[in-house]
Length: 356
Ligand code: IPM
Ligand code: MG
Image 1 (tube, rainbow, N blue to C red):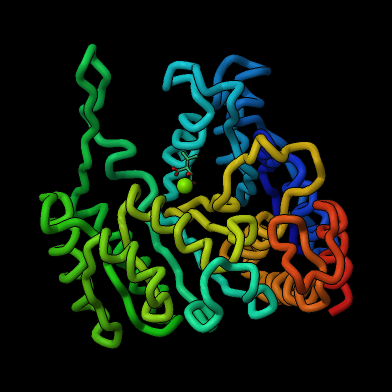
Image 2: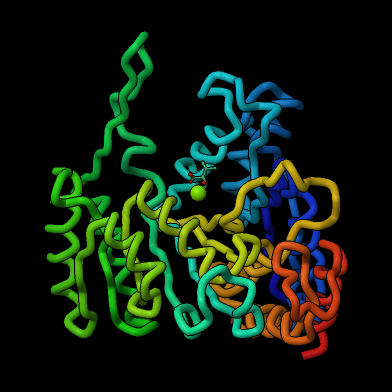
């Protein structure tokens, strides 16, 4: 029997609730597909600050590196907002991504037909949307030096090197080859030198993929086009901060940010997390949507472990639950049959995934 180890980082806010549901579903499908997952819990973010004073204790990095994959919930909350930057929960997450070298963040936008009415956009605009944001995750303005806050002056630096752009571009094109063979590279090359380099390098890498069509789009235009006609996109390839913003925007095409998963991949490691945050305002009430976390677990099974059938079970189960009208509060519109709690949603998905 195949055995996998997963570092479980539940984090803050709704993190623990949704990760518990993801584990429930993983346990259900692993029995069916005859593999076993062992979990090692590790602290990150506010939970780590409260226990150790550090948003990312050394032990967390060790556990994350020693396991076959990392499944992560969410971090942050008002309780830790006033701490100095080096002690903030977000700093812990950024350090974890960097330590694992997970430079490629894949954020699919899935529009479930069953939820077509949950999006604020018109059904005819969003129906059939199927896009993937490929976001560079450990470079750009998030990590560039120099940075500082000195008296009345503060600054950050957006830096990319040729090598950094090349490797993320290859991921973007490789993924496009398995999808609809279109890449839209998003930058701000009309203003920023760093974007000009981005554009030059992406165009060069494109020559290795003659079957993939490439176009370039300025980020402001891309933000508008995502709402005007999201179906025009297949793979959106972009840098760290633009990808952060556009992936939140793209999530609303699906109706709720509580639905969408992500995978962050590097040479060796993989980190899987919902794209939403810790939602402290609804934490502990049993109303958070666990689908993003469960769907992230499915991505982990597929990308990290090659357990395609198990991933498929989960994704099919999610569709079935939605088709049957079960909704958490964030996606409950007039066509909801029954509004369920976080844990009920997890149990239904686990049950259906095991039945397939
Ligand atoms: C995300 C989040 C993070 C980011 C924060 C929490 C540091 O917004 O994963 O999109 O900006 O990358
Ligand atoms: Mg974000």
